[in-house]
Image (tube, rainbow, N blue to C red; front, side, top):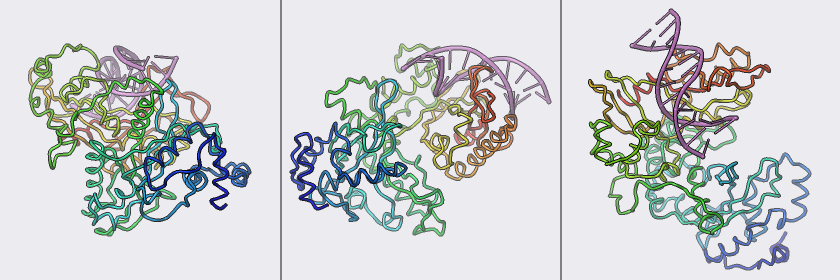
Length: 471
DNA sequence: GCATGATCATGC
DNA sequence: GCATGATCATGC
């Protein structure tokens, strides 16, 4: 279909004008906003609708952005390295949000911004990188995803031009540098999405075995793409949505770094967070409590996490940067002789669901690959808890892709055989094991064999954690 | 009512 | 003292 034909078509959409100035970011945004409330079906040619209706197994997902470019904006999708709207420097991205049971919206997934060329990125500077030049200004078009719906009928929820800037830019740039430095060090094969905060290097490929060569090592590395993390996308959507006055949501989250001026040269977000604890290391919880002048309940289960947040200068339940980065804060308590008191649990899994998963897309991998923030206390001779250290941590990719994967595979094999007493025990692997995680014995999930078994989950072994925190 | 984080109890 | 099994407590 040629463009004039397309223009005639789009001119009928809800009174939308087909014309916009493709050299102007603001005008592109204005035109994009007219998509809100529409579905793809409204502006693509009947022939394409027919094609997808005929074969519903074909997902429109991969081509949704292209259809918008071609039939709504009248620009051909390009393979050119720069942004889609070249003169305006604007890159178009469509991305799904889902509505949660409580009525809030959350991003359905991370936003992929481009495959990493390990050879190219290794020698780039951030400001002149392909990534930054292409993605500095994004036209984000969010659509509402529904499980039972045809892609043609997903409703566009929000369109917004967003520029990477301010505190976000600080963190994204540091993330980018961290990834680039790993490539420079010949460690592209050890990159993990959990290494970084907002910008993650997620695996991307036809299958888990899609690999590429890297410049400074003979080791093949998984094919990866730079992407904005799911938590970050959720935050973006909600901020825009609230700004439009569509909905009042009390976020109850506060930043650790309130002002960008708090960043000093060479200090990353993580450095600044760790520095917040400097005055408290070596103090007992009581001393910290008094020093902070708190009036929180000492016997509450939330006491330790609240104490940690207050030391960071955050008064809300949620920490904005942690939410956006998907950082999980955990309190670890060590005994007098430096061992972790407890193993660390993950959410219980459904027997019938886990057997359908592939490792690379598994829930467990996603959960374990997150970045953790450990607040480590140790009991002293008087049985007081003393703040020992704080640290960010991501499980090394070898422990995850080898050890944890083994445990995960054994688990699935045992479930398939119906041998629920043969699930991997702590003694079988030094990183992880399976244990019950339930209200009581009656708290069960259905099994593959039609019976019921107590809810169980994966645990990180206390001994492994002891090693990690250097107890 | 349930998910989640945290912790206890028992027996070797 | 540790592995394993079991359960508690809180908040949404």
